Image 1 (cartoon, rainbow over the protein chains, first blue to last red):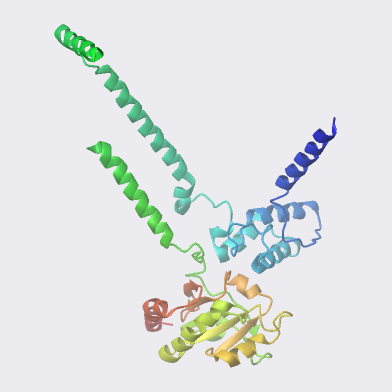
Image 2 (image 1 turned 30 degrees about the vertical axis):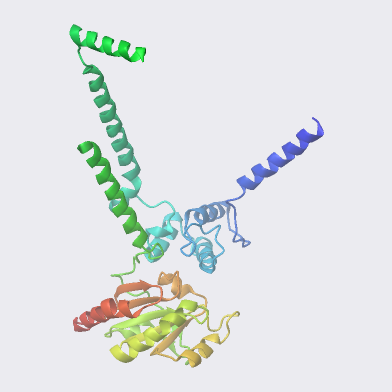
Length: 163
Length: 182
């Protein structure tokens, strides 16, 4: 491999790593867990829970003060109170509502959110079908010309050509 | 005719939808606590640190919990309105000093703030570590909660209170709640 290729490769690998790690942790606290399950649950929740201050960030990515407090709260719930995933989520939902979850539950008030896109897709398909069918019908209705009319047209075209 | 009518109707529907979207405030998240009992706490008071205050003490009264901090800029904007609200409408407003007094960062800035701007609160609870705030679902100071005689949260307002909101929403609600049985 020549020099340029090597350089390019290094650059590409670097770029890839940057992209891969861009969703990583911003609020880094060193945490200790009793076991692997707790750690996995904690890490999972950090990505599934929304920071309510910076609404486009999860708890893992947010630098907001409240996000840090919520990280502490979740950590304590998992390690000290030994709560499971559902209990931790329920605790936060009771206080902040479904909004705290990045993936809202499917229920009446979120039906539009969950199924709206599919309804739109269906609607689009129906309209597409209607339009194409209409065009098909039009083709069938191509004007039926009798002989004299054809003759008229031929004459007209020829006279145009003479100009 | 319908060839032009349908796209026009779709377009107008979109305009209405997007126009409505513009007027919504994405920071206003409906609180699940409305209609639920006020979360309990027992916190030291700002001016009587050895005396605790709890929502239990307010039972039988209609009251407002106002979450504020000296570091919160919009709390300044709200302060005059709150002061006026207490004076004019005689509402019992409890302050919740959120992550402010007694913290490493702010020390006694809260007290200096009250000297400068005045103190409209009947009592002030000190929530230095912010855990009571989490229990009340606080995510952006200032926030205000209206609690009825039975200790149920009936209304929550996120952001700085303004006169319009007080006149149109809070005062009628509080009048109604005062008429309810305790």
